[in-house]
Image (tube, rainbow, N blue to C red; front, side):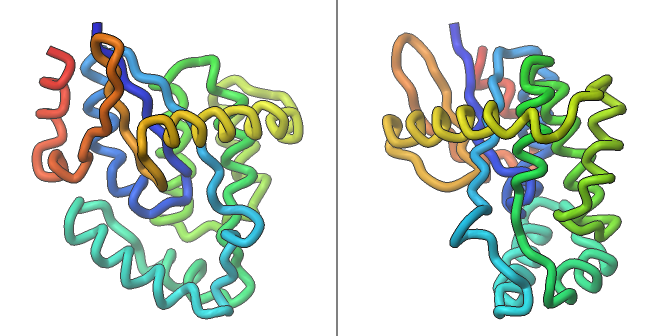
Length: 201
């Protein structure tokens, strides 16, 4: 039996770009586990005013070109153009942990909603009201803080799994078949996301 593990960070632009591919994989009905890595914290919590915005814009344009995922003018103006905006994905890591038990389909839809808010509507990563509102749509009324412990555990387990597979960074898609784990090159499926389902055949 073939199963998959998808390791991501909601506010990773490349994870946003990979969303149609992962969505196609999950919708195909195969066994997928999602794990939020929470990479953007501490020294990796980049402040736009420190020069990160220019680098991010270069990557975002490349991601849009390769995947077709849109980065709006509102995002460029309100997020990249705000010197005080910090790329810190702690709130989304907590939110992901709180819906993790609902399965990959729910967790991906949560990520999709939060990514749309950031990359299309241009809403800050620090907007906890938005995250709570999105969580409520999934029937989650618990406090965001309750996700801190589970989020740390999931992130640590994801890091360990990546290390064992020789993978690093996000997005990482791992395929588990016959006791072996291999990394899948997501970019292969950017043009035809639906073709990724053949991996489980």
